[in-house]
Amino acid sequence: MTSYTTLIILSGLVIFSYLFDLISGKTKIPSVILLMCLGIGIKQILDYFSFTALNFTNILPTLGTLGLVLIVFEGALELRYSKDKNSVIKKSFFSALIILLVTSLVVTLIIQYISGQDFYRCFINSIPFCVISSAVAIPAAANMSKAKREFIVYESSFSDILTVVLFNFMVNNRQISFSSFTKLGAELGVISVVVICSCLLLLYLIGRLTHHVKSFLVISILILVYSIGQMFHLSSLIIVLALGLFLNNASQIKLPIFRKYFIYPKLRYDIKQLFQLSAESAFLMRTFFFIMFGYTMDIYQLQNWSVLVSGATMLVGIYLVRFLYIKLVSKTDLMPELVLIPRGLISVLLFYSLPAELKIKGIETGLLFVVILGTSLILSLGLLITKRQGLSTQQGNTDFES
Image (cartoon, rainbow, N blue to C red; front, side, top):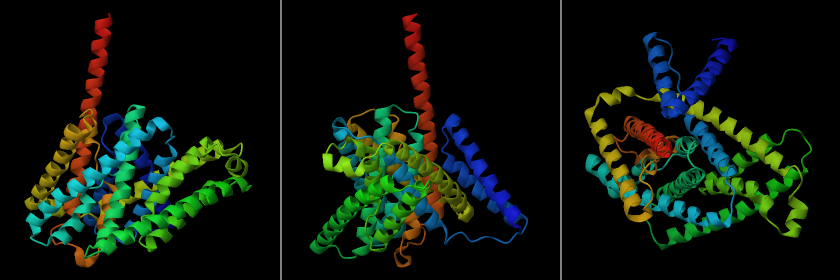
């Protein structure tokens, strides 16, 4: 394969991804499903013509990590803080936390019934199935009202962070004791210090750089800090969210000494440029990640009825927990909040991060694909139904006024 052929293929995949985004906007089918299907189709074509199979297993976690960092950062850069948003932040945090813990317990019991393994291993394996994917949820909420969109951005971002914290905590503590929580508190304290230093350093750096290339440097430093934190088993996604929120809201800080050293006239323009680059980079990472995930899928696992039944049982448990939380705790609109809990990029990333000795036979990529596909299809149908109901209501109001 020549370099030109490679460039043609890569360019074609990006163009397909762009078209899938346009189709997604019209049909409400998440573009990640179309990308995974494209990956599966490419694999089938290569197998049919007996071409040499490519192994993307090793590169998937790296692409997933880059995509996750950029998507959370992009979402955070969209959020403007004000005191009246304290309630939505608190509400979204507790929604993400409670639903994560309860769903994890439900899915753990399902996995334990399927596999007969001990509770600890089943709980670890359940975590990838229980996280709301900000990579899918945030784009899906793009056309909603501002209040609903902000809630989804906060909730899915908190879900990502809390799930990573829970996953790291469980992997690093086979035996949970008081010292485990003490260690977790110390880690969160270290992260808080790193967050403050990183935010101030990056904002100061952005204001002092005279080179025309700024945004890529900021993103590179962000990824560097995230990666170093992850090497020390810190929940570095907190840093990503905090940095995005800080940069987008720094102009609201009124302290004279802060404004003297950190605020400069072109700040809003630079943040806008940073947001644009983050969004386009996230688009690129998401494109190749989901195509490669679809390519590495063993679709023949889907011929096994036990995989489909297990996936359907998990979906029932996931949506039952969400339904009960909305009805009994949050008491908000049932739709579209009920369906805005897709699984996606971070689920795959955590699944591939499971230590080999903790993996359970039968809980494999086929089952994960069923859950991702199921939540995405339910999301699509839910958004279509909500859109039609909204149009019907508007038509009814117009007829009444006439």
